Image (cartoon, rainbow, N blue to C red):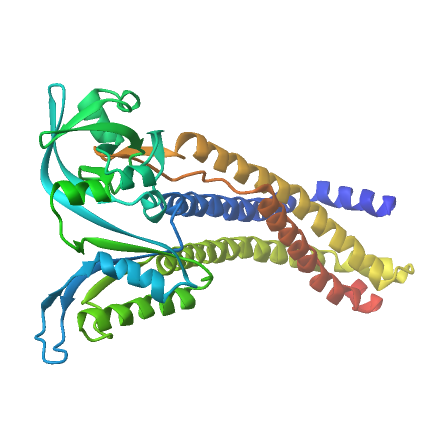
Length: 417
């Protein structure tokens, strides 16, 4: 084996240009593959960050208009949602419902703190709002059951509203706030999100309903599900809710515009499908790029074997077996592929790290929120090693087939050639 390695070293040194051409084909293929994967990860991680914390066990329902006549009732009539629908949902779907909540709102409200005044919407919500809307607290606490029971005048603001009214979001907790002539206490501040383009302040559902004399109708109903693990089951649950509401409010159960729904599980599946398609596409592009490097290695090894046919004939005439010749060519191909493969791998990893440092985790200021994009455009070491291993195996195969053909040539023919 040592003699074989020394011969391979001498062969590589005698053919510097050919070795360099082979190495460049291998290194560039791996470099482009890892770079493409890093770029795709930056996009995919951005999509995942925007949807992180998504409550996958929530179905939201909104009032709509019945687009079809039904049992003598005209089309395009308003279909409300009520508090009774919430309690009925818990009774009918006991096995699959963890909890339910409703929401109401009051528009054109003015909130005042000191000399600052803000036009806003006041929303009455349940304590599980944080889960159903996948929200996170920045400071303080959220509304609780005691706030609901005692109809407390407490409020939760967004970071943007807290900064406008109090200068800094972190000092808002515990401060007093005048809303339509009534005094509220700020108990919490929510983290700002990209979609929070308007102003909305949250108060207990019971408080808003009592103060503004709201009736039974609500703006939204949220259902937290349980024992539902697939999108098919979530769709079945959604259809069951629609049929229940259709019996209560007299509309066609197939009329989707009568009650609007948002099924978080289905949307999560769409995000996963999009990321899977993107990952697959970039892998295909990267592998095609790497394939061009493999073809280059194969062509160069074919030329190498043809040039050494006379040498192989002499070796066979002196007693060398076909496998000795094949092994030598395969080892030469693998050594070149391995050395330059790792060069390409480290170059790709270094470039991804450069992208991460100079272009990754960029922040876009939307005015109402700051959004990160191109998040963590790097590739895991396991992926890099797997890609390099594929290139090494491909290099061995690229050397095997021409070497096997040359090894089968009779010595007299090889010497004549």
